[in-house]
Length: 370
Image 1: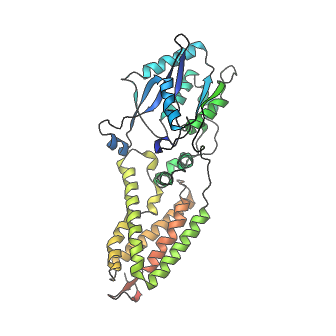
Image 2 (image 1 turned 90 degrees about the vertical axis):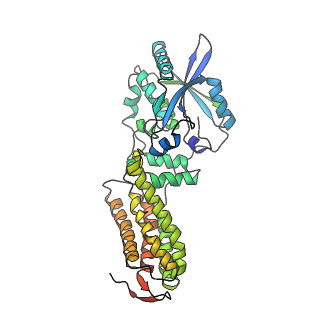
Image 3 (image 1 turned 30 degrees about the horizontal axis):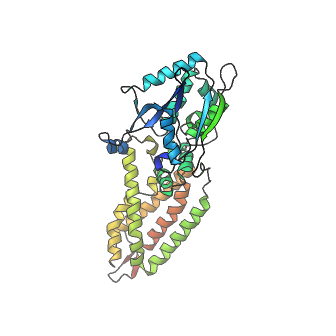
């Protein structure tokens, strides 16, 4: 099933369909069901402890939802011998029993697509994994998430800011199959033990009426750097002449950086969202920015921000320099260079603009003392 327009539909979907020639009935085994009404659903979502379940439903009933949403649906027939097909059908039916249906959902490692992948792999005695584990497109969990989230800018932004270095390791085709469309392509190239193609036939069941699946678009870091330099120079210039105006603009920026930094710390130490841990964006969107709010408020009122305000400005600027160093070092690679080149000049410009003490009238009084 191709991507939809609701945020949880952006990454596509898939299911295993079992056709019973005796009854003429087709059953869709769909691993993508969750219940927003279950106890502590929101808390589990926040903590990264989601529960999904496998549901068996008539194929036409499952298909009706995608027809209504205008999402394209394709079918791949798998060339399994009768014994293997019956074994897979029995395993799915057992897994769909209420006491077995629920599983702990992980966005990248254990989702609706990886469950389908694993079921097929077990049925052909590990042949799928052996054939695709050693190959890679060079994609990462981040690149796939950003690609598919790109039609929704807020979603793209959330993934890019919130994902840590674990999301930037190049993945083999096996891991890349967390995306249903990638799994479909991998199945198309897979062969059985005797050399026969696993997929014998493909059909388009429903045409895709929405935007096509997004393609990966490279980030133009130099555009981010140019924007950062303009903002940094503007802050440094404005601060020398109109410190109160600059403080009015800086206060919401510092609040936002502090809030994002606090959220990243919470994800790291308070949740099981492992791909958000050790996020190096903490160095450029630091919780220390909340320390600047009191001094910034004083500057807005025409008073001196104070010694600790200037020290905090210096620490925030140094943090972005450290972020650049770690990015260059690549010991724990994270693809956040565009955020560094955007925010480093801005933090530096704000530090430069407020680095002098002021008297009550707001005029410059000389270099800041320690």
